[in-house]
Amino acid sequence: MAESPIVGAQAPDFTLKSDGGEPVTLSSFRGKKVILYFYPKDDTPGCTTQACGFRDSYPQVEEQNAVVLGVSPDGEQAHQKFRAKFNLPFTLLVDSDHAVAEAYGVWGEKSMYGKKYMGIIRSHFVIDEEGKIAQAEVKVSPADSVKRALAALR
Image (cartoon, rainbow, N blue to C red; front, side):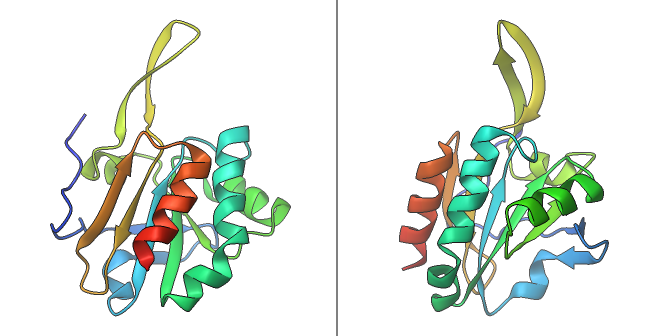
């Protein structure tokens, strides 16, 4: 697993396909704050808790001149279904080759029922208006992720 970027460092830039099929480039959000969060899989309990937490807090996110971007290896169609099912007001990005997760140091070994495998480590990064990392939380619980990211926006 690569190391996560440190607070104060420039956030690794990227372009990924959105749930709507459009390319989204992180640096195009300069001048706004970005909550970039990584989650393992669409429509699973923890990921739904995290996504719905950001959905329910979206008015506070917007008040802070910020946007939310969710990233997982799932494809465009899975993202579309997840976004529609839970009425998510933010963009979900497709990182099928997990290159962006690797750049942020959140692709690593996980374990479930004693079986080891590689996957996304739940995390979020708050990126400031200049594209620098203001907060990095790796291995964060779904509910804590939302609370901590919102606190870092203020």
